[in-house]
Length: 391
Image 1 (cartoon, helix red, strand yellow):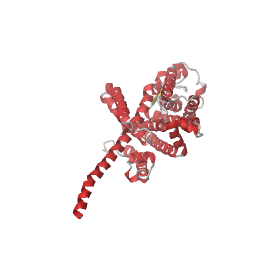
Image 2 (cartoon, one colour):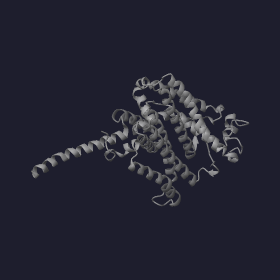
Image 3 (cartoon, one colour):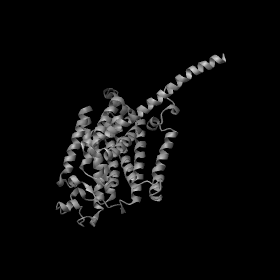
Image 4 (cartoon, rainbow, N blue to C red):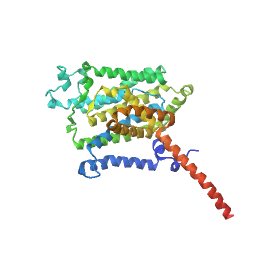
């Protein structure tokens, strides 16, 4: 018999059942992001103890984007059993797609006062490349963000899954794909700014990109995107599609035997996961103010897997927790002890793999269960004594 909602830890219920209390917590988070944060950043003076600084808005907004990527990874790894070490590619493609629009919005306010982006003037380009045509349109940029990563993911996934490539071989291929893309984007002649990438953004939809109001709007959009991603992922994993996907993860041959074709299930969730990463990348770039090929590095993609492993894969809310824990730790380490960050990250991954196979969510569940068991054991003798006295 499954445990009742009242006795199931909240973080597990949030990922699996969304009962009334879980919906309430989602509402509290939305109210904080959409109401409290704007008031605390825009209305309260800088010397007020509850004032939220620009640094806080940028940091948390960035981590919200990372959390979207973590949930996207959890869909394919936690529920589909597909470990990708190349999701940084789709995140960066989304960032570049929207970064093209932001670069066009600079106009003649750049260093060279040209209609071309500064890096093109520096490299003596005379006109925009054909793939930059239409990039000054916001709607076209949104289309690029969604379609290009989805198309690349679909084509790659179709041939990989049709060939039944899985396990470590699939992980290595995704890693190689991302590394090849990074080397391509490092080249100046590709038209994406080379190793410097895109930066020095000025405006978004006509509004100054560094204005406090713009930053708050981007923060709120990131929070809404995370909530939407969680709701969409929850709907999928609780549907028939999600049950088949989990069955494919656990026993793909048996699923094929009963008449299901794993190809289309894996391909759909793989492509959707890539699109979610691209949306996160598009929200990330205007908040951080830069996008370059380093976002496609192998290390970044491995970090995404670490977020999911630390939080607890197959739980939806676990990867969000993992993304926040790891990136908050990274922000502190890179300031206080930058030379030890990679050592800490490696140790964290080893500990999570060996001792926390279900991540923080699983640890919390075990501690709660142990606490309830201890309480029941403690109540046993007391109840027996009471019965004896009554007799």
